[in-house]
Structures are given as structure tokens and as C-alpha cells.
Image (cartoon, rainbow, N blue to C red; front, top):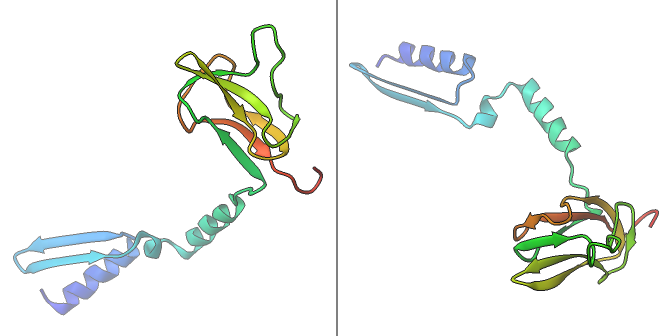
Length: 143
């Protein structure tokens, strides 16, 4: 393959903002590759970076997850009040729910002091191991 043809293909490859290009003909075989991030327009890189910065993880929130597969109960029984509601302050070790697994009632306890920010599961629903149950605002400013 002639060098002028190779240079032209490289130029077209860069202009097209491709990450992979391959040609195989009677003159030979040419493969051009680059990382996708390298092929992005610098303006797009800036936009993507700013999106990432906006999605910073809130380290003051902690998720309480299911440790068992079973049925989620928000209260001790049908006529009882829920253990917690959104906005309630909880203490480390406080029961926040029950998961019934194989006819055994397993208490879900708060891993730390904090405030319940969100409840992800409704009373009586099935939960899987590791499923999000609550988000908890950990102690810090204002708590």
C-alpha cells in the first residue's frame, strides 16, 4: 500500500472520529485503532467530565440492604405502626424492619445513627439478597 494512500486513510479516520478502521484489499491490510476517549471531540470530553463531577457520590448517605431473601415487613404486625418512616432519627442497632425467611423473623438493624432518607421497599414485598431497603443520612452537620 502506498504511503500517500495510508496517510489519506489516517486523515479520514481521524476526521470521522472513529475508534476502529480496517481495510484489507489487493494492496495489503491496514488496521487503525485508538481508544474511544481519544477519539472524542475535546468539547465532548469537557461536557462528559462536568457530568461526572456533578455525579459525585454523597458519602454522608449509607444504604441499608437486605441480608436475606424473604418478605419485607415495615412493622411488627398488621396492626402495629411501622418501625421507621422517612425523616425518622434512628440509633445504631435500632430495628428498622423485619425480613421473614423460611418462617423466621429476622430483624434489620440500623448500622449507624442517622436519619431515614428514603424507603425503597413496600410492606409485604419480596426482597432479594443485597437489595436496597433504606437510605440513611449518617451523622454530620445538622444531626
